[in-house]
Image (cartoon, rainbow, N blue to C red; front, top):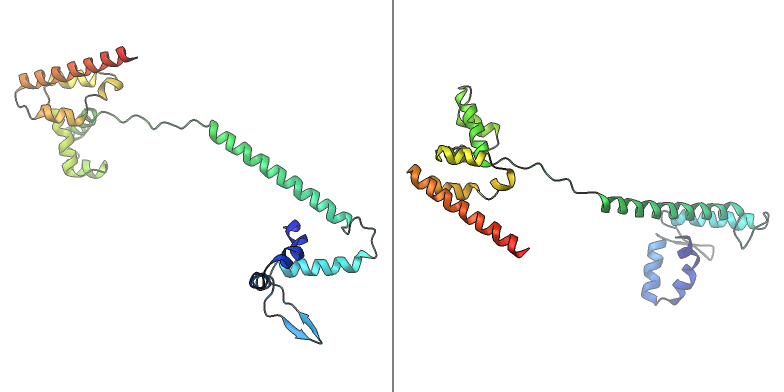
Length: 211
């Protein structure tokens, strides 16, 4: 800012008439003409700089100054530079810390079949109904019913999925299991589930060969 003000006269003289007028409008507001002299009414901030400059010119002849600047001003400029350097250093430090932060992973979501078992356990207590479960879990009643339909899987399939690791469960999505539920016969469900497991095994082997 101080550097810009020091060069303001040179910059002003280099501008065309339109730009000069725009600069004057930025600096002044409603200047007056009195006693053959123009009296500018500087806008806020610029009026403070003008007052400081007038005060400085009056004291210039009294104090021993260097290059037109009092020692106090020189010290202030040094302090400003130190503050600026400190701010830039802190900004770089914060950016470095942000880049080193490891993004926290959200906790794994339970498998839909596990959620269905939890909902069933709550219903069996007799203290809640499906409407209560929907409200407590932020779901619609239709969604509660949809999840609980997974309990129509053959008992061996349910047990096997619930005993799988999380990485294994991820393959057996709710959508895939809903296709099996449509098969009313337990034998057909077991056959369809075995087919699903075979596909997963084939995919796993293909990835192993690829790596």
